[in-house]
Length: 242
Length: 323
Image (cartoon, rainbow over all chains, first blue to last red):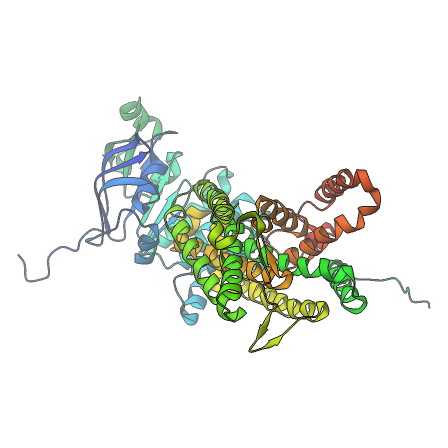
């Protein structure tokens, strides 16, 4: 209507997304949205379908529903095309390539980009964020500590040049201090304008960063909340998840 | 001041142990070439298996998949070579071209639908194809002469120049093997090779990075089928005879043994494994009735003390930690 071009489409818009493992539906018609430059958290207990949601967005699991990225529909059966469009997932359990070196892992992150200069630029940025990766470049990724592996997984995702970064429980199995370090880096990335969709079970840290949060329980999006209005995760749990 | 003569750096140590399997296998090969005799025949077979196992290694070692049916591709190409050169007087090279095309077409038909699926669908499909091709070779007597086999296959050669001496054949095979190993090395170090390693590591993680797993698995399958086809055709020309047993289930068992004894995923592995496993029965002949027993014990010992294969023995020496 307006002469100023109207409102930009959201970075990610999900409508009625369901996911299936064989005949079992693990995610029921989820609606969810990530606006430009927004940090959104998805919270829920174990088995709520958080990983399934991420895998369904990427097309790593059989799914149906509508997923639009920057106003354009994303194919539902091709994680490769999602990645090429800039939707990049840091999978649960990190998914790093253990027998390869840190350098090779980072190289594979930039698999779709063949431009040398761009590759160097991205790598320098990853080193600036995670100086420890630079020290460990020639080390086999499987021999890194858990925290370093998570940093590598995020660094590798950044090598892909994401326009939306999705993370599936990056805090899993890490010491609180390391989790804080990683989340503060995610916060910094978001401040620079990178939209982030973060799935977490441990809510407090995610709630500090997120502008909005969704609550997921037994495969359903139960509520959308404003993190500033809740004092603690226990309060949320008491309200929605009991 | 006395200098200690025995200071060898750990890295040099590692490297020399890494070179050992190459040297040992190369040494046997050189011995066979110089002194000739029965060992030359054994080594010719071994080199053909090096090609076959190198192909299998691209699919199983580099891409982390499983195939029990690569013998089918060797059989398709071998029989095509045999039939076209004996009944239709084709040149061996042209006949191999036809055999390769047939093997690749077959690999595409099996690979395209099954490689999109995960798990053991492909392994099952390949096993079935191996058995089907064997049955066809036995039953289609008009073309293959069944168990009788096809004899009188001409030796390798181009435009009337034939390699008939055993030594000449061994030398020619050694050149082909060198090219094949070089190709495998190039594949592993390439962008394509990296993608295969990623797919082998975690298919989901690779796909989430934009690496098209199905596409690369299929390409690796076709490439490895091509190597199998090459081995299959070379075999019929070197021996001059082909029968269904040549490409039977025995070939699958033998090639798996070679791959794991040599070291799956490595370049040297298929080379070292094929030569050692071909040599073992000859070395163990003196044990007469206990030959199979000793063979089995030898394999078990190898898997205990070199679980990643002979070519990965340098891994037994600790790598210096970079500081």
